[in-house]
Image 1 (cartoon, rainbow, N blue to C red):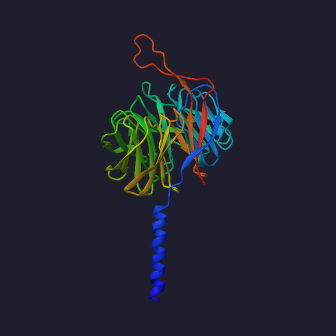
Image 2: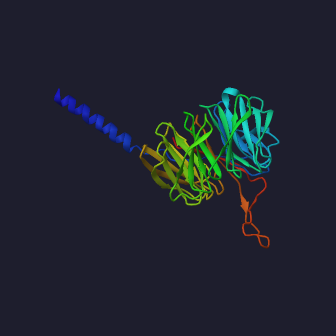
Image 3: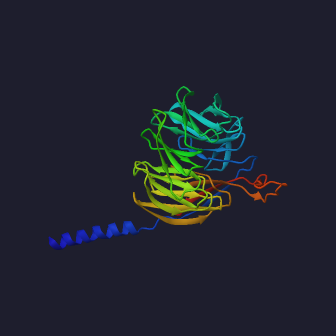
Length: 346
């Protein structure tokens, strides 16, 4: 009996060791879909209900079949669109139109516009937009107004405006009614009570310059804040604001995603790299892969069904500065816009 017990314990230990030591599947480029078309892009949104990808393209939102790489629909008349928020229980979507200072409301079944909400303020410039399922509210984060506009998703009406400490970037809900948002120009992270529409706390992110992309592990209560100009990611305790770890990533990361099934954090950067970080425990994180994608592939969406990563990119020509122009903008090569699919090797 003792020999049998010892054998059983040895097997359990071996299984535990092998589980810990098991290598993380490596991601590689699976498809490159040439979508073309005019206009830049910003935040990508994957729709797990309709199995579609929403891609903002300056004046419209392209709706793409991510499994075939084809444009299957469009939401027109969205000037300066940055992002799309989906409220599936209401069959509604919301777009943030930065140049018009509006939010378009559309029917997710037909893609038809059903309303247009004016964002108050002097040129507020709505940028990131997020739906919080716990409060059933949409939050439009207004870059130049240093504010968030709160919209009741059921009625499509504005219920509050929240002053913020600085320029907001992306946000992440915790699933319990709290919302976290990066403050880009202050190197901070603000905590919003979605139901009361009030800021509960603002935390400084040391050594974090220009926090942009933000993701969250809702179970372990860890936030993943990408610092675009300092090439690192701050991993933050969502309850205390303490920085748990700092992880190196690529140059100018503009999006972060966390996969709760694989426990991997994804950080794409403008320099054409995708950094993949494994959450071993709530306090231990390791970079398991840095792979080449394509220059400019800084925003992304996670396919929560197949666990693939989708990245948008295009080719650019060098900028030709005009006299006195200290920050000339590069020009996008016409027709070069693509959707990249990164998949884990079987």
